[in-house]
Amino acid sequence: MISDLSFTQTETHALLEADQLGRLRKLVAELAANRFYAPRLRSAGLLDGPESLADFTSRMPLTTKDELVEDQRLHPPYGTNLTFPLERYVRLHQTSGTSGKPLRWLDTEESWSWMLRVWHRVFAEASLTPVDRLFFPFSFGPFLGFWAAFDAATRYGCLAIPGGGMTSKARLEVLLDNAATAVCCTPTYAIRLAEIAAAHGIELEGSSVRVLIVAGEPGGAVSAVRDRISHLWGGAQVIDHHGMTEVGPVSFGNPQRPGILHVLESSYLAEVIDSASGLPVPRGDVGELVLTTLGRHGSPLLRYRTGDLVKVSTRETSELGYAELALEGGILARVDDMVVVRGVNLYPSAVEEVVRTLPEVVEYRVELSTRAAMTEVRIEIETNPDCRQPKTIAMRLEEALRNALQLRIPVVLAGSESLPRFELKAKRWIRLDGGA
Image 1: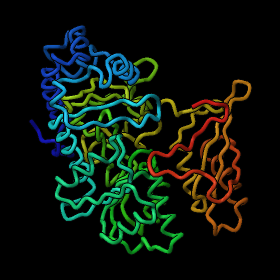
Image 2: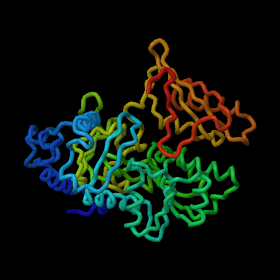
Image 3: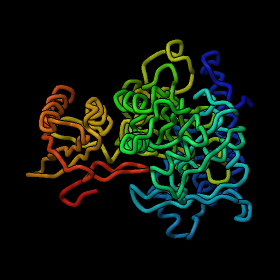
C-alpha cells in the first residue's frame, strides 16, 4: 500500500480513495472478534468488507461518544471496543473529559506505532528534521495530548525535551538552555509563555525556536492568533494541528496556506455531515467532521462523530498543493460550543480572531447567559500592565466585534491577573446561569 507520507499534489483523488479502500478492507477483516463493532458490521452487511467507500459510508451507522461511554460503563473498565486480547495492549490514555465523562483508550504496539508514523508526517510538513530539538511544555497526564508526539519525535531522530512538572519560568529556562528549535503546545500557552518571558526579562526574539506546532484549540488556524504568536516568538513559524485521544493525530497545517488544515487521508477516512440529518454537506458549508481510523486496529473507530465543526475548502488542489481534504479555518468550533445570539451563529474562533487583533489584550473570557429565552453574551478582557488607556481598548474591541460579527457585544475590564491562565485547552466560554 501507499506510504502514510506520500500524498502531495501529484497524487490523484482516485489513487487516494483506492488506497483508503484497501486500508479499510484490511481493518474490517480484523474486527470479527471486536465485540463492539462486529455486530454492527454484521447488521450492516459489511463484515466481509465494503465494496467501495460509498458502500461503507451509506451502510455503516455512525458511532457517537455517548455510545462509547455507555459501553465502558456497562463493561468496565475498557469497554468492548478491543480487537485483540487484553495482553496485546501496551498504552492507556483517556480523554480530558471537557465534554462529559472521560473515555479510556488502549493501544497495541502496532496501533501506537501507526500513530507515531502519522506524527512523522506532521513533523515533515512542519519542515522538521532529525537535527531539530522539540520542547514539550505540558503536564504529562493520562490524556493523549502530546504523548504520541513526544514518542514520535524520538523515533524521528529528534532530541525530545520534556517540560512537565515545572513552572512556566522554569520551562522557558529549559527551552533556552537546551536551544530548542521547535515547541509543541496549545496556542493559549504559547502566548502565556511569551507573557511570562516578558515579565521576567527573558528574550524570545533571539532564541533558537523557529517552529511552534500548536493544537488543542482553534487558534492555530486563526490569523490574528497565529500572527500574535509568531510576533511574540521572534518571527517563528506557527503550524496548526489537531487530534483527539480516541482518534489520534488527525491533521497538519498547510505551510503555504496557514488558515488551512489538511486531514491525513492516508490514515483516516473523513466525512463532513450535517449534524442534524447525518447527510453530507456541500463543499463550502459548515458541517461535523466524521472520521474512520484506518490504522488503529487495536481500538478502532468507524464513522465516529468527532463533534468538530469544519468547512471543506472550495479551493482546488493546484492552489492548495495537497490532494488531501482541506478544512478552511481549521476547526471552527465544537458542535456544543457554537451559540446563536440574536439570530447570528457565533463561533469561538470568530471571537478569537477579533480579540487577538488588539495586542493590548493579554487574556479574555466570554460570559453567556439566558434572558427571556434569548442568549446574551459579554466579554471580559485583561489588558497588559503597560496599557495606559484600558477603557479605550475595551471600546475599540466592542467596535471591532460589531463590525466583524454584526453583533453588539459588551466588553468589560477585568483586574490584572484576575482571569484564569491555561497550559492545556483553554476554557474561556462560560455560562453564568449554570450551563456548560
